Length: 276
Image 1 (cartoon, one colour):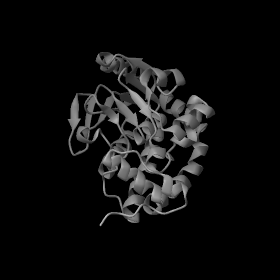
Image 2 (tube, one colour):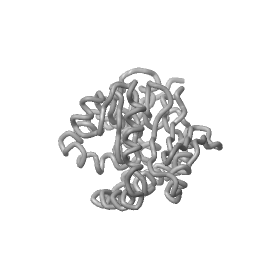
Image 3 (cartoon, rainbow, N blue to C red):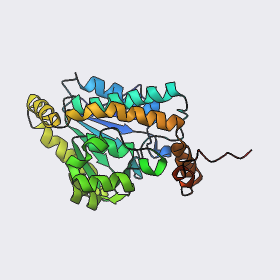
Image 4 (cartoon, rainbow, N blue to C red):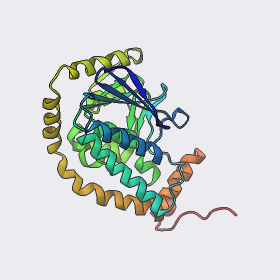
């Protein structure tokens, strides 16, 4: 296979090289946050991978050295129920494709890997991080909860108590601690990150494509049961996002750079009145 960069993408850079497909989220101005178009393009790429015999491994990365992905783009106007459901459908599809595309998916992390970016980390097969990597969930800080495979399968990676800590506290964990708890496979200095990712890809490509496909199916079987809870969990998040007071306060606080004020929510009151 010759080296090539695939055209037709706005939010992604897609490159082929010797059996490896590198998909780079190219939104550095938003720390590679996922908007609806980003999700649609990721689904498009991985749909093709599922039937592309020339691809033996996929690497997911982010442009720049500040972030792999900081989650969903809270500044994108997905305010209507139709817009939010369309976006949720793409999240569902992307999760399925990451699990069923038939080849190992490696996440390459430099900088932040937060929120939905971290859920991609949980879903993917392998993760290699530079020492600058920072991992964590963000949902409870913003008024909702991780419901896209992470809440359902995180405990299998790190244990039940640690999973609850990660989700409830929305803490951020440096790469070394993420390695210790089992969230990543390897941590190397940032300047060696690409070499390490390439070495893992080369080792994978030395092995049987059909064997790897069957192994991925078998390893995923243990958590396939989680699908039953993902759709209702995401539906609850859609309704909460559209109609609940907590996301309105959480997103406003995030955009204004201030701590969220949950006193009205705990008092059973609605969202704070807007000025004007």
